[in-house]
Image 1 (cartoon, rainbow, N blue to C red):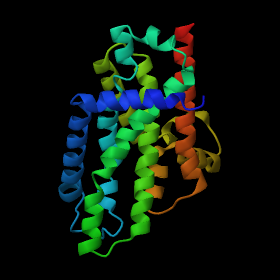
Image 2 (spheres, helix red, strand yellow; image 1 turned 60 degrees about the horizontal axis):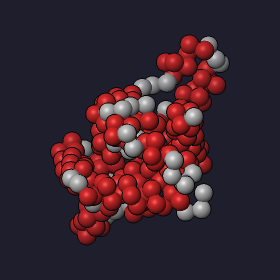
Image 3 (spheres, rainbow, N blue to C red; image 1 turned 180 degrees about the horizontal axis):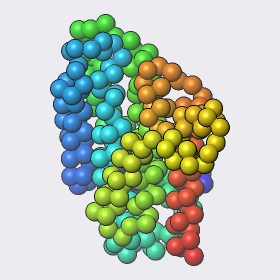
Image 4 (cartoon, helix red, strand yellow; image 1 turned 180 degrees about the vertical axis):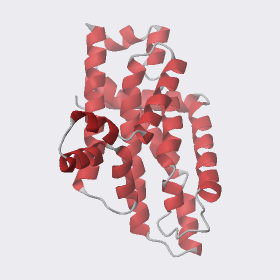
Length: 243
């Protein structure tokens, strides 16, 4: 694959910032994040040494904004009829998929970068737990990476960016709020195994472990595997359509 993905990555990032899409997403992100942090998260009324009131809402904010970033990555290629041209270029299919995914994830990094003045403000005026805050940023990066990979996969099934966005929001909200223990109970497993499997599958369990400083291998693996699975499925879907 060498660095072929870098060509796609630069192309997609440039197209984000060439228009208004990236700037609108970044502006909306910082406005919503700060509003929820100060007014929805009780910023001044709780112990906020780890910026918990900021990190608590991030998966829900990302559920609305990441589909806006990924909706055009594949859907617009199909809509404009440029997908066939792209797939005939001397670039491996996985490089195309990986480059598009990294471009979307890069946008999430840009979003988080805009929140760093809040971190600086906390260090100047409050006593902070910087290690916990670093863990929180890692958690958001893990979640956003998983969401980007999933939404890139969703975009491959859609021929309209608007439809891709709507499906992306619905799926990400479902992933955020659904308690898989209800589904697991149907299998009729032993209670101990049922509890372990439920904790393993629920995104919120892994995310809230990370933002409270519990950086364990199972939490990291959950997000890494979810990214890899979505990218492999993305590859399978595009390869099927190509052939």
